[in-house]
Structure formats: C-alpha cells, structure tokens
Length: 82
Image 1 (spheres, rainbow, N blue to C red):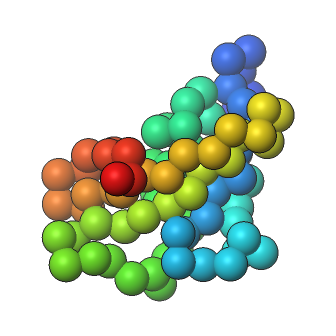
Image 2 (image 1 turned 135 degrees about the vertical axis):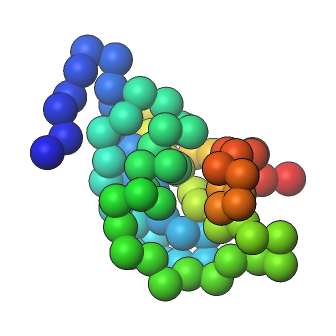
C-alpha cells in the first residue's frame, strides 16, 4: 500500500521506449524516488542498454514538469539522461 505523506506527489512514470499509455502512477517525494519506485514495483520487460541501464520518463502530474533518468541496474545510480 502506498502511504501519502505531506511532501509526496503523484508522478506518471513510463519506460522511455514505451508508449505513454503504459505509464504507471506512483506517489513519491522526488523525481528520482519515483523512477526507482517504478522500477521496483512493476514487472518490466524493457530494453536495457549496453551499459546495464534502464531509461524512464518521470512526469509530475501536478506541475507538468518532466525528467528522464537512466537507472544503472549494476550500481543502483539514478542519472539524468544526457
């Protein structure tokens, strides 16, 4: 169960290669936390690049701001897409 705190927000997150219709909604405190939650919560069959990374688009539902992250599955790092 997701517990909403005062500082949590709703984000729509999708794999970068996927259609936005396959996005999932998560409640988290930051863009980075939403990216990691997406990866942890959902069974994904998505392409991983040659460096062991998975790319996601994170959209803040309230503000409309959007960020792309590369999640390194070997190190656990969350890196902004370049």
